[in-house]
Image (cartoon, rainbow, N blue to C red):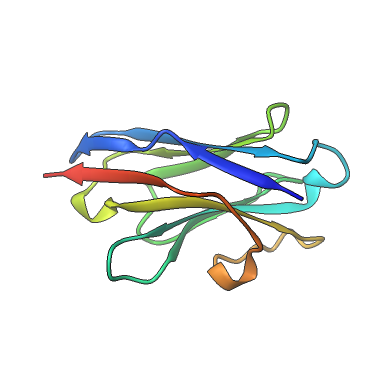
Length: 130
């Protein structure tokens, strides 16, 4: 059973930066954890949960939502079993609850559909003011 815990949320002004972390427990890096899609999602009040960025732990392949491209960077530290999301050039529309999620996958082609993921963290709030 994989447990995920996000941290690093908070408040920032437009144009600022924040870095989110997601620590995974219940798993060690190896044959098993090297086959996970790890993703960041966000959900703003009254809106559906949407994918922001995803990485395949076994090779580092990444993908981003259009809204995140050029501003956000997803990365991982396999030794710490930790996922990161570096968010730069923040905009007020980035305000949302951010969640990390995990999916065991033998394919490196990861999607960003919430329904595909079966492990979720509790979320961390990001608020960007103009």
